[in-house]
Length: 466
Ligand code: IFM
Image 1: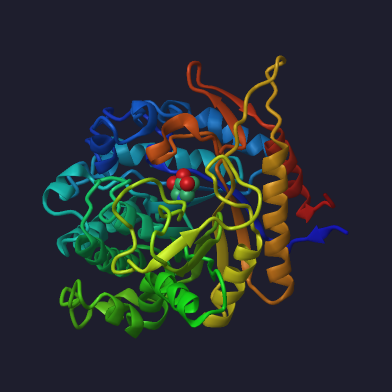
Image 2: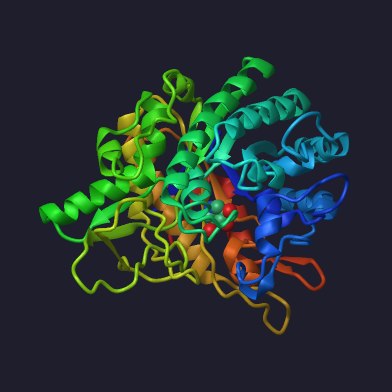
């Protein structure tokens, strides 16, 4: 049995600025929180930094040519805020914007639709010095930056995304501290979550007022596919708590203009949420044209028992939890084969999320803005890279997406994470998510067998039998 995807379905791949661009100190770019964090010993495996990364800043024309060879119809990338507006305030740097203009032009010249994301975690360091995401002003700064990029690229970009995975920015950045800026304060994490929501709303408004009417505004979230270990009331309550902190803290304000009452109650001993101003929720509920869903693996939780083993929530090792006020929740390894991240392979989580948002936001188009897996890919004696596990992973997740479409979900595109191997945040270059292998010593690109396989799926719009 083969599965055909709808005509016009977007077949894409995704990357992010800090993970591939390099050129960290060129053309006026100043440090982001990830430059500072990765240059601080002990934060990133192997002491790796994004200084050079995959050198995409200098090689983007070759990379776009490769995308075209692979038959991609769309490319999701992120704009580096400190490259465009180095201090996070004031006028833009022309050379920074020129890079993205040239990238977009190159994509369009090859028939590839550009989908920029405005914020994929690289906050200008100066804004962190002024308090970062826990401070309200950062949301206003983001809106100003969104307007600058919209003015520069608005004539040639149709679909925009404001933020990527604000959960990670808030809770890994300010809660567990495994991501930049490495703070470990649960209240700061909750404040950051609200100000990221506000940034999304203000940013969406800024995009709308600068862009032509045909433009589409989206956001990319990583909602949790959270499962309870058993059907006991205690385990179901653990599931409810984590669902609120992983997903509803973003989707309730964005889709419904409210914070979940259970979230406010669960976190009441930490914060009174007085940083949510009266008009904020109406701003955050700015109408979306598409919802981006990033999905990798499910989460399994139960009520904690005494002598609980260390947390296994797949979000890195830290003695500080990224889950504010959820001290009585235990995390378990979900069943299934593991990727190199130790994330279990379970495409039903993707299906469940697509159906959840189909029910929750009828009529809102969905984009799978990230999905993929890291494996230990190595070139063989001939220099070829065979990655059958990645083909199996992507195949299974595309089959889940197809099933959701058949069941009524309006899924309009799939973006493989990632186009090429890159800087995997606190794991450095050790984890390889790319369909294209990067030899970091030479910067040679070698499409893995999954890239060839995906190219054929993209070309035909048909998922073959395994
Ligand atoms: O590499 C990241 C990406 O930046 C955001 N989503 C998850 C990916 C894999 O961890």
